[in-house]
Image (tube, rainbow, N blue to C red; front, top):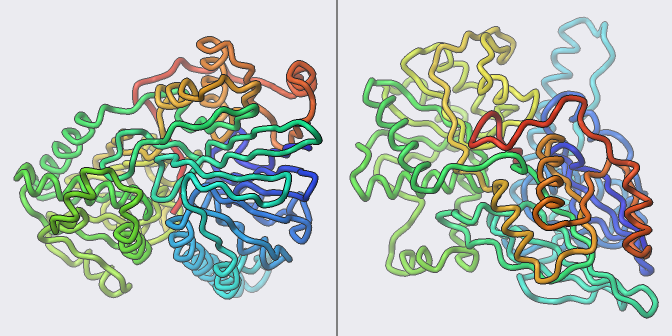
Amino acid sequence: MKLHLRGAIRNVTGSCYVVETASGLLMVDCGMYQGSRRLEELNRLPFAFDPREIRWVVLTHAHIDHIGLTPRLVAEGYAGDLIAHPATCDLADIMLRDSAHIQEEDAAWAEKKWRRAGRKAQRPPGPLYTVADAERTVPHLRPLPYDQVVDLAPDVRLRFVDAGHILGSANAELSLRNGDSQIRLTFSGDLGSGDSQIIRDPQRPSGTDFLVIESTYGDRYHDEAAARTQKLCRALTDTLGRKGCVVIPAFSVGRTQELLYSLNQMEEARALVSYPTFVDSPLSINATRIFRKHPECFRRELVQDMAGGDDPFEFPNLHFIRTVEESKQINRTDPPYIVMAAAGMCNGGRIRHHLLNHLSRSQDLVLFVGYQAENTLGRLIRDGRSPVRLLGQQVPVKAHVDAIDGFSAHADRQGLLDWFASVPEPPAFTLVTHGEANASFALRDALQEQFKARALVPEIGSVVDLALDNRALVDLVVQQETRPDRSRPAPAQDAGPAETEDQ
């Protein structure tokens, strides 16, 4: 009985773990790598396991860095279920189709450039997978509500617990029988911040023997909820008041809906003058529709407001943009206005065209409200790089650039520690994953210092024998741990780049 760590190790994308059980292989998440070209090339490597030999796949939530390679897995022979919360199933349907469409568009563009260049370079690869692959994947989705226990096999039991990250996000709690003994293994998935205006707080997890915990913000803290709202209102008022435009790269699932809710609240409180606001993302529009279908994931107060007829995602002067022509028309609109578009890290999508039109305008604002992974365009802009290469051009950055990390759907350092403290019994062993190296080691250090936890930052490809006793396990894997080359900074209050999500 072993745990294989295959992704999201010392980085925040490509989440993937494989558990060997007596009844077969179980995969937790099958995510896409995002960020630098070097990282994205990992998506084309062969799977570490033959997809035909995987018996079950469990998905913790619908972000592409957790589900994005499932169409490739199915295309290469996986025939089982993709088990996820019902809201995750609904979101995965639209997310996978959208991801496949992007794959096809990017491949067609690369092929066109190759032909124009006279075919001198190596021919670019085709799409990672196609829309047809995504459509064949969707029927594999199998819903499992929170707190419902399912026996996948006589020796494998699964339960989802609300992780409070995005709609349908879950901790995956596994109970594995090994002879006469039972091993409890918990994957945190991505944990919520606990101050979402829409999604419920993370639920208290069950006791566990082995814990795999994310560490996206393991070395930093978020703004308080009231402070982030004030900062957003001030940033919008200042920019729109000087006839500037506000461009917000926003992840389609989670962040866009949080922003719409905040703008709705400001409108109702008359804290913000009504200006044209554009949501330029068909995926965001479809995701918002799915949010309305799943009030079981919402805070009680929001459910009560909706029962009274209030739509938290609608307000005057809000325009949802679907077509390319409508998107182009935005840039012919007289300022001031607000535009939200995907992708959240500016690594694709319509946001790049809006940045091309606004980065060089000194009266405008580019406002980041989510994590920018290393080597993405969003990270370069946020870190002050100018000029930046965008759609084949060198574009000077004259616009104001600001960030509000408090809107993150991830728990910050304190939230992660509080969630760990809520586990009824301290885990016998904890693996810290899903974070850039400094963040993972900072959280590992805090777990050891505050809770005397046996915690490890593993290396990619590490294998943990779950059947070994705790002391032998520590001795087996601790030698794999290496620290980053540079010293780790102390935790900072909203300093520097923040988190990684996906589309």
